[in-house]
Length: 118
Image (cartoon, rainbow, N blue to C red; front, top):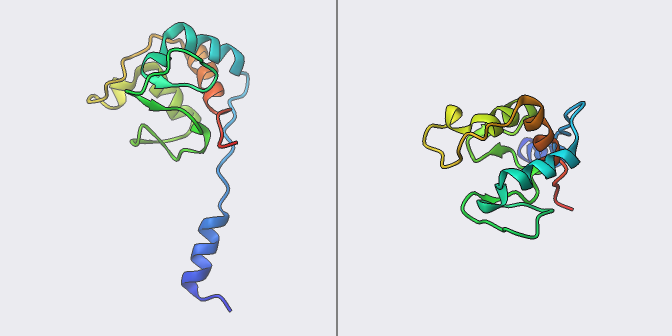
């Protein structure tokens, strides 16, 4: 018999990572935008051979991360806003506002959500 604490641990361990899809967005366009915007200067981005930045942290397994930059919940709407204007959400962030349109940020987010632990 599993006690309350054991049942809680089992329930937590069995929680699936929410699937994050952005309807109408194109991950391939997102990677093209990531390259064009120079995101790899600060971030290690799977799919980019160079540059391989380390200042902003790696984006490996991004889809399985619970938080964006350790600050905000990793949800599509929040990610799109972060990609467009991170300083508006966190004035002390080193990440600059990107100038991406809503559609472009959705494409970049769609690419980031393809990055899983596999």
